Image (cartoon, rainbow, N blue to C red; front, side, top):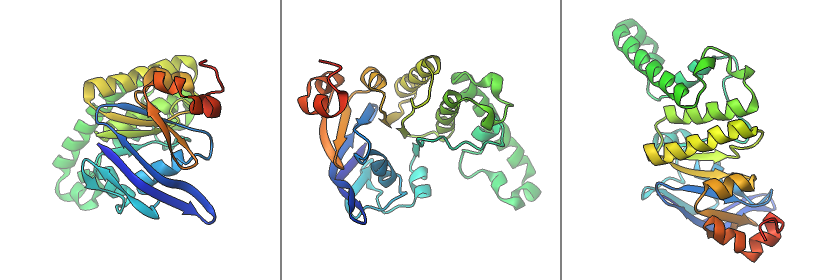
Length: 253
């Protein structure tokens, strides 16, 4: 589904991504691990159009996307989250979901004047879908609360809920487990699995929590020095001496 071919990206004298090539298969939950500075988030920014590569190519479902803007890539049904959640703090949780769907009739002021029925009908359908999504992630009881009042873990669930409103084919998650307590972590992991298995959404996620990666992801890709170091099943990665020495500290020996 996603093909990264020989991507290069530098910032001044720093080569953040160096000749990186990797693939993400449709229907997978693929993990991306590596130390700070390995180039993981920079790679996500390249895939989603926030940065332009110095060289190399990126393909999504066979179509080259590395020259597209972020909004164009969003319309290709790729959704990404960030290490620090970016909710609309002064809007309710329900409103945070309802603003996600693209090309809403009500976004154009004249439609509210000449096509009010269409605007109302579409808004009703979007609200119904948002309520269904909030039921799925178990945030329905908080639907009228301001998003800024949520805990860190609840904001991660809100991010996942917002991704569902975009009806994505692929979701890129940047450290979804960061700052999440064990109870909410289990909910988050269960929801990711369900969305992959039941909705066919492909996930590509950066994570430093090795227990989450080893229990959720297959395959696991390891980055080091801006390029792919290793790839395999969680069991393969556990046994890879380079990975054990550099990233896992021997905890799986």
